[in-house]
Amino acid sequence: MRFVSTRRRESASLDEALLRGLASDGGLFLPEELPFFPADEFRHADSIADTAAILLRPFFAGSALCGDLDQILEETFSFPVTTTRLPDASGHAELLELFHGPTAAFKDIGAGFLAACLSRLERDRATRLTILVATSGDTGSAVAAAFDGRPGMQVVVLYPDGRVSERQARQLTCWGDNVLSLAVDGSFDDCQSLVKQAMADSGLAARYRFTSANSINIGRLLPQCSYYAHASLTHYRRTGRKPGFIVPTGNLGNALAAVLARRMGLPIGGIVLATNANRLIVDYLQGAEWQPRASIRTLASAMDVGNPSNMERLIELQGDAARLKQELHAVSVSDAEIKRQIRDDFDAFGFATCPHTATATFAWRCLPENEKREHDWIIAATAHPAKFEQIVEPLIGQPVPLPQSLLAILSRPARFVAIDADLKALATVMAQTFHLDEASVAGDK
Ligand SMILES: *Cc1c(COP(=O)(O)O)cnc(C)c1O
Image (cartoon, rainbow, N blue to C red; front, side):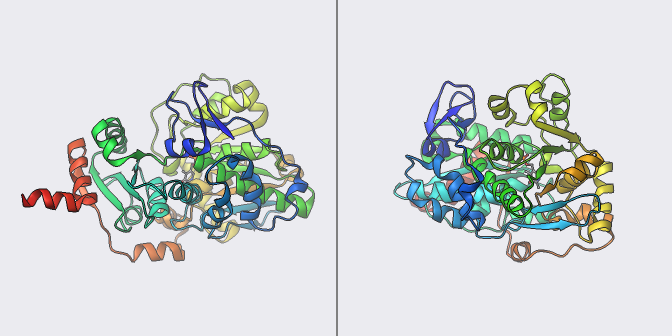
């Protein structure tokens, strides 16, 4: 299958799109056509990996990875994706728990799939591929975990020193020799600007073969369709009803995957996007111009996005606001509402939700009564609450037990280098870390 840029000046094979991330015309890759599946086609798919294999096979037609798909999916879904029924008298609601991976957030699924694909595409290359990633917290740790220890690949994670939580910092700095974690003296924007400068530097680019692995890579989007497909099929088989999905939304990658799954024929009803106070998507669906804004800091920090880049894909796929609002609803949730919701969720369910997931449980509670009564809803739970214990624990008045994955991470030693927000500093520390032999030979002379 071919993948076409949203700006239509370029197309690529799957393998090229995976390696490149962004199209060279500045657009985002989308499949040239979407396959359509009758629900019956999945009748023998018992596990999420089985469902994913059927769903994603057409996208791998002609790819060098075609024969590896089953193995790639086994690696991607090496941890469970579970659902928990919520006690609700007025209708049916469940949580789709996407946070049982190595860094306890849904990004583990996309990052794991991309790493499994890239490491196979790269298996015969003599020189290493370098993943450069700027992060405000969650993305960097998921990418580092996914590429940790993979031969032929190395990762450089740049995060703003002092501006990530203690636990986030641990998750960014606990990896092996092929991961270089850099605490940058600056903001997230400074980190991102450093990544851009490094990629634009022809000397560095030739030496390190950079790629980005960020959330616009088609390799992060495609596997996310699998859990919407599997959860909707499971529910539909059991009840004969199409569930709607409510998705905590920042850059729109997760919600776009739900839209794609529905377009491919999966039994999905409504789709509701829950944003935090960064409400550009909500305003756009209500008729405002698409006018990217500076992001606002909120409690649901992984959704602090002022310019959701996947909107470009959504518009290409579904049309502009007038069309989109027939297909989607969107709700903006304030910090005060997030706080109240975390408390209410704990009281009602007996367990905590993370601040991101709480935007979605809030959106669910705000649904009109008849929507709740007549339709079944599945709420995407995007992170484990223990990742955000500084916010959650004071609200619920007790500690959140750590999942096994995070316990393992927090017990490892931290390895990082502090650098100035400066390209020369980045180049120096990379040379020292990844070319030790060369550097010491040069030093001897
Ligand atoms: C990244 C992230 C989101 C937002 O997902 P998008 O695909 O950017 O919309 C929501 N919740 C958590 C915990 C995240 O890490």
